[in-house]
Length: 137
Image (cartoon, helix red, strand yellow):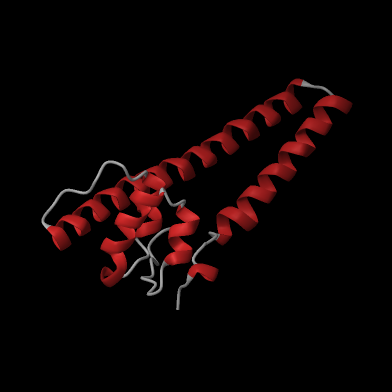
């Protein structure tokens, strides 16, 4: 059962394999560039930097897309519950936090988040009936 304490997720392949291996490889290539410079070590270091940036961009683009989808879902959810458009006063991060609220407390939390300018963490801590999001990576 998902809750505030365990809602944050890590993708094992990304966080525990790709990232450490990339950083270790990059540090090794930098060491070789400094101690034994050659065109081959320069090419290896450059390739590693490009691969790391590519991996980071792929992750970033995926997260940005998920953020846009969550924004649309929460706007639709609010409209479904109220027949009114959602206020533009909420930040994207607040909307992302509000997705965990059950329908029963959602509208009250939206109003509270706007009036009190709650941080995303404060919103999550306020939620009593947690609505799990197992889709986000």
